[in-house]
Amino acid sequence: MPARQPVGQAGSVRRASSHVPATTDGGRLTFRQDYFADPAAFAALVALLSDTFGIDVSLQDRFGGPDPTSMPFAYFDENGTCVANLSAFSMPMRVDARLVKAAGFQSGAVRPQWRGRGLYRELMRRALNWCDAQGFELGLLLTDKPAIYQPYGFKVLPQHQVSGPAPVAAKPVGASRPVFLDNAGDLALVKRLLRERTPVSSIFAVAAQVEMFLLNGCFDPGIRLSYLDQPESVVAWKSGEADCFRLLDVVGKTIPPLPFILAALDQRPRRVEVCLPPDRLDWQGMPEPFPSHTSLMVRGDAADRLRQPVMLSPMAEF
Ligand SMILES: CC(C)(COP(=O)(O)OP(=O)(O)OC[C@H]1O[C@@H](n2cnc3c(N)ncnc32)[C@H](O)[C@@H]1OP(=O)(O)O)[C@@H](O)C(=O)NCCC(=O)NCCS
Image (cartoon, rainbow, N blue to C red):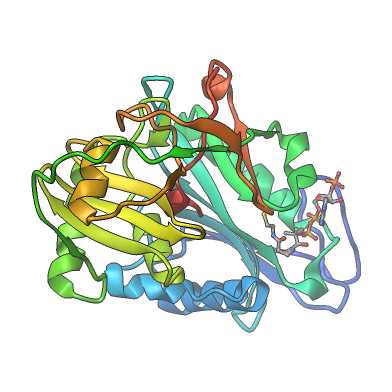
């Protein structure tokens, strides 16, 4: 059930983390948690994220709605406008060969007229308390403002893609075909494989999460999805510049080696860039810093043992 708690008193601003800053214009805010079952409240979040980031998360409706593990924390004004939000969601990870109970933090935004009053600090406090109570041992987020999250114990985990000459082509063992998420049959196929998947890397990879792969597949029209029949899998990839093949993710019970993938896709690039640790791809390249305006941050010691360069697949970005 959504939690409702009126907050805010006209004319005063309190900064203590256990209190919510009041409005200065006589309005009142209502704190709500776990409110996605309320269509009006969810639409208000869609508007907040559209106004703040220019993205349309209502696209998820065509895939069956938001991640059912999502736990949103938010403030709404008297008109039902969502003025601030932060959501946590479950994203089990394979980290250093171990299955780790991890949570992602996303959809963090405060409307401009409400910024600088401690709303986000309060939402962070509530979200982290909830995650700790749920027993999540790792927190993950992507941000262009790492300084905000350092006081809460988040550390930047540098990301490295792996690049090198393409492997010697294998003989094609199976067929491939394009997959389109706006085709109902293809969508059902991809969802099934996402639910059944083996993590694409044993070093650092998502173990189970469906919605972000589908949403990222829609957001970027440059991403190509291909179905391989042997072993049954879906490959997310891009044709990079200068005869380069960019591998973004592989979804299946069995991960095909990179030479098999290239043969099945009939790709003969000069170079390959792999946007994930390639330990299951039967190929090696050179790690190089991944150029990005966002930093991957982690909280919890589950990632401390990592000795090899890592990258979160772009299909898991949130
Ligand atoms: C970033 C944002 C969520 C902050 O919301 P806010 O309600 O103004 O933040 P708060 O007033 O609760 O401030 C919380 C803390 O973050 C710090 N902070 C706020 N904005 C910051 C920024 N841009 N860079 C670094 N620190 C920042 C504050 O100084 C404060 O620190 P303190 O607790 O030590 O006093 C808001 O400015 C926003 O929506 N920006 C656009 C979207 C965005 O960047 N979202 C985050 C993406 S990961």
